[in-house]
Length: 151
Image (cartoon, rainbow, N blue to C red; front, side, top):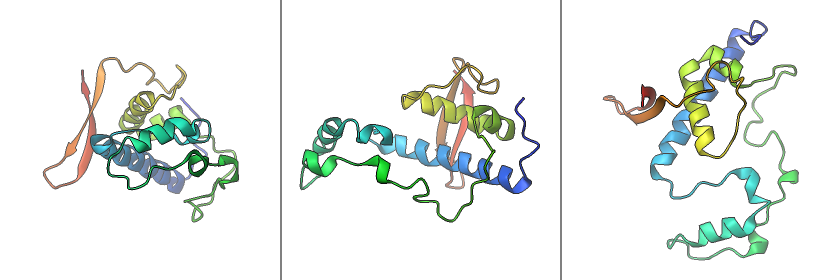
């Protein structure tokens, strides 16, 4: 069990909300997306990105390689979240997320694996998911929900 006693209630709530938002947003997008690009691959493979973008017939202009090159080193680590303050010494990993919200943490790990990310076997007791699958759908109230089911 990870050390989570040093997390305030506010930090726990924020982590759980962020985790659930990530799962909800990305699982909904999976339903409609034709392609997936890992942001860290854009700078290393602009040709791959260009091929993917140009395969979409709805684009009026196919970007040139020069237009596709992104210098990730110039992107601030606070981009898109300047409104938050990050406490030092709070390492967030799968074990911490699993301690606060086990179901969403497992779903996030399943999704991360589909996206090509790897994680160790010390993922807070949720390293083996062969018997589980995520099921996402609209609830009777029109909300997008995800759950785990036995495969």
